[in-house]
Image 1 (tube, one colour):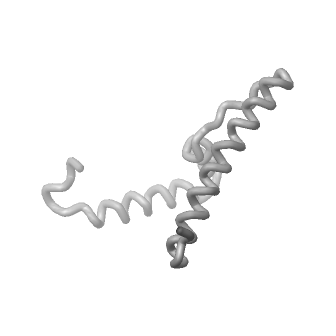
Image 2 (cartoon, helix red, strand yellow):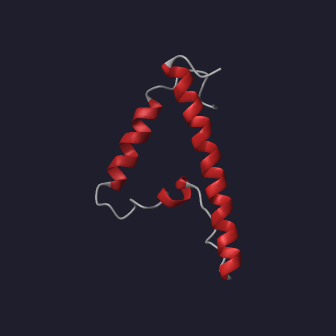
Length: 81
């Protein structure tokens, strides 16, 4: 039975896209193996971002403001969370 609502169709497309992405990763791996070169290891986006702005002149101020903002939401008794 085909999807009937827009939400159902979107979920179907998302599942199909995920499947295609997984297959593409496998094809790339196999191609690299056949060509004799291994692809570079995949790193998470967080590892790529960490430290990328540390040379930005206003970075210390951004860090300070971020800490101040997070601290403003800590309620008594939640300090250890």
